[in-house]
Image 1 (cartoon, helix red, strand yellow):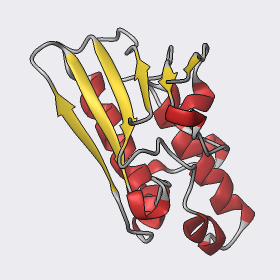
Image 2: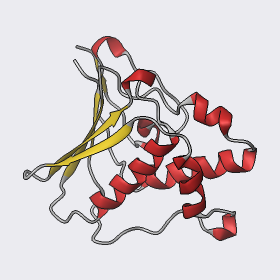
Image 3: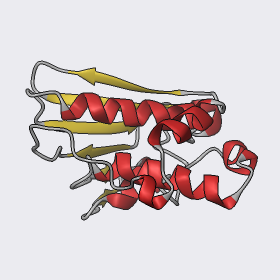
Image 4: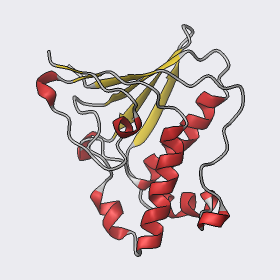
Length: 163
Protein backbone atom coordinates (compact mmCIF):
# COMPACT_ATOMS: atom_id res chain seq x y z
CA UNK A 1 0.00 0.00 0.00
CA UNK A 2 2.96 2.34 -0.23
CA UNK A 3 3.35 5.08 -2.78
CA UNK A 4 6.49 4.53 -4.81
CA UNK A 5 8.36 5.93 -7.76
CA UNK A 6 10.60 3.89 -10.02
CA UNK A 7 13.41 5.87 -11.53
CA UNK A 8 15.98 4.67 -14.03
CA UNK A 9 19.47 5.91 -13.31
CA UNK A 10 21.31 7.89 -15.92
CA UNK A 11 24.21 5.85 -17.18
CA UNK A 12 27.37 7.64 -16.24
CA UNK A 13 30.77 6.39 -15.24
CA UNK A 14 31.77 9.58 -13.49
CA UNK A 15 30.16 12.15 -11.25
CA UNK A 16 28.49 14.94 -13.15
CA UNK A 17 29.49 18.49 -12.37
CA UNK A 18 27.35 20.60 -10.14
CA UNK A 19 24.80 22.67 -12.09
CA UNK A 20 25.79 25.77 -10.14
CA UNK A 21 29.10 27.32 -9.13
CA UNK A 22 30.47 30.28 -7.19
CA UNK A 23 29.57 32.38 -10.26
CA UNK A 24 25.95 31.83 -9.21
CA UNK A 25 26.76 32.63 -5.56
CA UNK A 26 26.57 28.90 -4.77
CA UNK A 27 28.86 27.01 -2.44
CA UNK A 28 27.77 23.42 -1.98
CA UNK A 29 29.61 23.05 1.33
CA UNK A 30 28.16 26.31 2.71
CA UNK A 31 24.56 25.32 1.99
CA UNK A 32 25.25 21.77 3.24
CA UNK A 33 26.28 23.21 6.64
CA UNK A 34 23.18 25.43 6.80
CA UNK A 35 20.86 22.56 5.90
CA UNK A 36 22.33 20.30 8.58
CA UNK A 37 20.99 22.77 11.16
CA UNK A 38 17.47 21.43 10.41
CA UNK A 39 17.43 17.81 11.65
CA UNK A 40 14.79 15.13 11.31
CA UNK A 41 14.16 12.04 9.24
CA UNK A 42 16.56 10.24 6.97
CA UNK A 43 17.08 9.13 3.41
CA UNK A 44 17.99 5.44 3.39
CA UNK A 45 19.64 3.57 0.53
CA UNK A 46 19.65 -0.19 0.01
CA UNK A 47 21.71 -1.45 -2.94
CA UNK A 48 20.62 -4.90 -4.06
CA UNK A 49 22.68 -7.55 -5.87
CA UNK A 50 20.20 -7.31 -8.77
CA UNK A 51 21.54 -3.83 -9.59
CA UNK A 52 18.35 -2.14 -8.40
CA UNK A 53 18.60 0.13 -5.38
CA UNK A 54 15.79 1.22 -3.07
CA UNK A 55 15.88 4.78 -1.73
CA UNK A 56 13.44 5.40 1.13
CA UNK A 57 12.34 8.90 2.14
CA UNK A 58 11.87 8.37 5.86
CA UNK A 59 10.20 11.10 7.92
CA UNK A 60 6.70 9.72 8.57
CA UNK A 61 5.95 12.14 11.42
CA UNK A 62 6.04 14.95 8.82
CA UNK A 63 4.50 12.95 5.92
CA UNK A 64 8.05 12.36 4.64
CA UNK A 65 8.73 16.07 4.20
CA UNK A 66 12.39 16.79 3.52
CA UNK A 67 14.18 18.36 6.47
CA UNK A 68 17.48 20.12 5.83
CA UNK A 69 19.51 17.12 6.98
CA UNK A 70 17.47 14.88 4.66
CA UNK A 71 18.37 17.14 1.73
CA UNK A 72 22.04 16.57 2.56
CA UNK A 73 21.37 12.81 2.94
CA UNK A 74 19.75 12.73 -0.49
CA UNK A 75 22.69 14.47 -2.16
CA UNK A 76 25.12 12.03 -0.49
CA UNK A 77 23.04 9.04 -1.64
CA UNK A 78 22.97 10.40 -5.20
CA UNK A 79 26.77 10.59 -5.12
CA UNK A 80 26.91 6.97 -3.92
CA UNK A 81 24.61 5.90 -6.75
CA UNK A 82 26.69 7.73 -9.34
CA UNK A 83 29.71 5.71 -8.24
CA UNK A 84 27.83 2.38 -8.11
CA UNK A 85 29.05 0.62 -11.25
CA UNK A 86 26.60 -2.29 -10.88
CA UNK A 87 23.59 0.05 -10.66
CA UNK A 88 20.82 -0.42 -13.23
CA UNK A 89 17.86 1.25 -11.62
CA UNK A 90 16.41 2.90 -8.57
CA UNK A 91 13.10 2.63 -6.77
CA UNK A 92 12.24 5.68 -4.67
CA UNK A 93 9.62 5.15 -2.00
CA UNK A 94 8.23 6.92 1.00
CA UNK A 95 7.91 5.40 4.45
CA UNK A 96 4.53 4.80 6.13
CA UNK A 97 2.12 5.00 3.17
CA UNK A 98 3.10 8.51 2.00
CA UNK A 99 5.58 9.32 -0.75
CA UNK A 100 6.79 12.87 0.04
CA UNK A 101 4.96 16.01 1.05
CA UNK A 102 7.74 18.32 -0.19
CA UNK A 103 10.00 20.34 2.08
CA UNK A 104 9.52 20.57 5.82
CA UNK A 105 7.94 24.00 6.22
CA UNK A 106 9.62 24.51 9.60
CA UNK A 107 13.00 24.41 7.85
CA UNK A 108 11.78 26.59 4.98
CA UNK A 109 10.42 29.23 7.39
CA UNK A 110 13.66 29.21 9.39
CA UNK A 111 15.75 30.12 6.35
CA UNK A 112 16.43 33.75 7.09
CA UNK A 113 16.66 35.30 3.64
CA UNK A 114 15.70 34.78 -0.01
CA UNK A 115 19.33 34.15 -1.01
CA UNK A 116 19.59 31.12 1.29
CA UNK A 117 16.22 29.90 0.03
CA UNK A 118 17.53 30.09 -3.53
CA UNK A 119 20.70 28.20 -2.52
CA UNK A 120 18.56 25.46 -0.93
CA UNK A 121 16.60 25.15 -4.19
CA UNK A 122 19.82 25.05 -6.21
CA UNK A 123 21.21 22.33 -3.93
CA UNK A 124 18.11 20.15 -4.36
CA UNK A 125 17.83 20.79 -8.09
CA UNK A 126 21.43 19.72 -8.54
CA UNK A 127 20.86 16.46 -6.62
CA UNK A 128 17.58 15.63 -8.36
CA UNK A 129 18.71 16.36 -11.91
CA UNK A 130 21.59 13.94 -11.45
CA UNK A 131 19.28 10.92 -11.17
CA UNK A 132 15.74 11.41 -12.39
CA UNK A 133 14.88 10.22 -15.89
CA UNK A 134 11.53 8.41 -15.74
CA UNK A 135 9.01 7.80 -13.00
CA UNK A 136 6.10 5.54 -12.26
CA UNK A 137 4.07 6.47 -9.21
CA UNK A 138 1.53 4.14 -7.69
CA UNK A 139 -0.71 5.68 -5.10
CA UNK A 140 -3.42 3.92 -3.13
CA UNK A 141 -6.26 6.41 -3.34
CA UNK A 142 -3.92 8.86 -5.14
CA UNK A 143 -2.64 10.25 -1.84
CA UNK A 144 0.14 12.30 -3.38
CA UNK A 145 0.91 15.51 -1.47
CA UNK A 146 3.86 17.68 -2.37
CA UNK A 147 5.15 20.32 -4.69
CA UNK A 148 8.10 22.59 -5.16
CA UNK A 149 11.26 20.50 -5.55
CA UNK A 150 9.54 17.17 -4.92
CA UNK A 151 11.41 14.24 -6.50
CA UNK A 152 8.73 13.69 -9.13
CA UNK A 153 8.98 17.28 -10.37
CA UNK A 154 12.17 16.63 -12.33
CA UNK A 155 10.79 13.54 -14.08
CA UNK A 156 10.36 13.80 -17.82
CA UNK A 157 7.46 11.34 -17.79
CA UNK A 158 4.90 10.66 -15.07
CA UNK A 159 2.51 7.73 -14.81
CA UNK A 160 0.04 7.52 -11.94
CA UNK A 161 -1.72 4.30 -11.13
CA UNK A 162 -4.67 3.88 -8.79
CA UNK A 163 -5.10 0.59 -6.93
